[in-house]
Length: 508
Image (cartoon, rainbow, N blue to C red):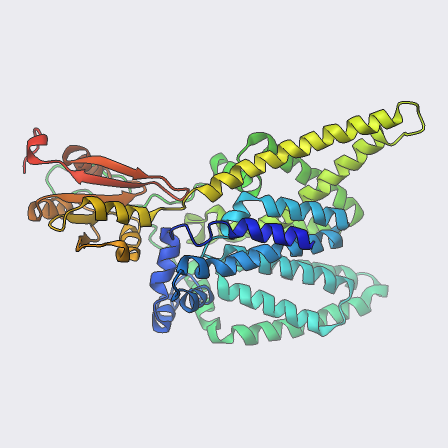
């Protein structure tokens, strides 16, 4: 166990402070400048304050990339120990070891363990709640477990409202077990203890959440009653000949096969063989575990299916629900996949390697272990390939973009920032500039870009993500793509305006 934790921490430590912040992390930094900014942003918004409070406390250091991401690393590493513990409770110690190895190598978990949005912390708290729930159902009497469960769930709510997915699953699982116990007269004492503990946990949780409870209730009301503007309606140009444009926001979630495939790849690997094999092991592990403990079927249904009842029935959440909102899936998915791997292993071992009494027994055992070791090595190499690619890649290399502009843009020239929080990325690393540079934000319309083209002798344009059709046409006509900075969270493009002599057929 200690070896797994140390190896997991070492992998997650590689490059933790060397990579640039990407725009979502930078946005967290910009929100977290002061305590007043945090409270103002979170009140009436869609996020609770704990994540920003952590960023506020950790960002003012010589290496903020390292310190701000440190909670993700710490809790991501501790999740490995939690999964090992949960595997022992759900099935046996071997299941915990295999699940811990799968989590240790998971590229998706590695990504979140080095990210200042703290989805790794959300997963840790969800796993802690799951473990406490299982222990409570084994022995419901110690009240300290109920109190600790309430604290864990409340902290998760303060970190992100998507905690509702795992917290609701735990509440539903406890309620179902209490109802089932009440149906049997000999289990009435158990049901009463579950009821008393649940009341204590509810009171403790409400007490912890009381400073923020009104905001949470207001948010629920807005999601239920209102249909927020998704930003997907684009307006035609004010000119007499409207120019077709792409939607200004292109992040609407589409629940199709591509979404499901992406989620499965994140739960496992992009490599198809391993991705589908892991899904098959998950199904086998689920069936095998349900045979030993039928209540696991209810737990799995609540864990994986209940979130969609929330997502698809709320007006706002269904418009934008990326896979990271379902990060709690990862823990139980890998636990049941680990159970499936061991079920298949045991069955094959009994079939092909166990009969040592026959003359060829030792040879068959050697061949069996050699084949399974080869398969395990190939799976490990598949994980390592994606992990190494992640560790070597920037999320979004804003630091290098600013340094490139510092080397190539003259003080008399202007740098225009495009859409999707591009200004945040440039201004975050403004300290990398060695000479004065005109950084101009909110340049997402052709009118604004044309105005700056008229004011400065030469203009640079930096953006990432989808570009509106009219802006794309302007960039193609008056600019040339000078450099692209690839990243796992998006490619940053740097354009430079053409000289007047290079532009043909375009009026200045």
